[in-house]
Image (cartoon, rainbow, N blue to C red):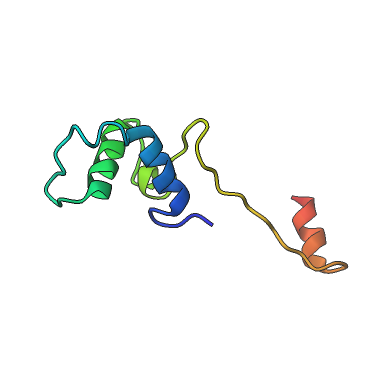
Length: 84
C-alpha cells in the first residue's frame, strides 16, 4: 500500500540523495528527512506533482511495493478480479 512518505519511498529517497545530504545544511527544519525530501522535490521532473516524492519515488535498483490481492476461492470477487 502506498503511504505518505512510506518506508519504500524513504529508502529510495535516501538511496538517491543520501550522499548529498551531509554536504548540504540541514535546512530550515533542522531535520535530515526534510532535507532529503527537499532534494527529491528539486530533482523531480518539471511536470510532476506532489505525488512524487511524497507518495511515489521509484529508483532503479531501489525498493518497490509488492501488492498482493487476496480472493476467496469460488467467490465472485475472484472472477471479477481476473476479467480485468
